[in-house]
Image (cartoon, rainbow, N blue to C red; front, top):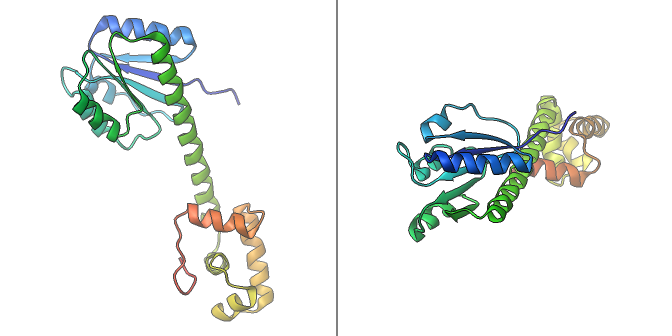
Length: 210
């Protein structure tokens, strides 16, 4: 597969800023898309490639903080705020809501590009984690009901003979189910299986069932 080219989105109502920042980003080798307003950006379908958003805090319709709130679920797209003036309360609000940087205009090229690289690295990490979690969910979905029961009891720390007693089946049958669980989940060890169960959000109760 060819490497996916990261995208940097720029939202600023100042044409000269969009042009200069866009040119700088393109020169660096990233894809760039510019928008004059928050609503214009919201009309752009979400992407599943490494991306970040360079966002002006002051916009004519929705302001930057309002847009940040609207797209809060898009954790794979870090936000770099830019502003023509420093505002400590606004900066604190933006950073608490997850912004990775808050830069004051005029923008220093090195500072902006460093922030963009950091944001894109974070985006890639988030996308990788989401892909791994989806693969785990797909593996778990392939398990039969009995295999899920065996997995839940095994990761809770039960020995095969105790699992057999709990489910009313033979120990040989438990071993067969356990082997299929390990193969389908692509787990190399019990420790792997426990980590996978935790990643899937399963917390065994006293009976060992999620």
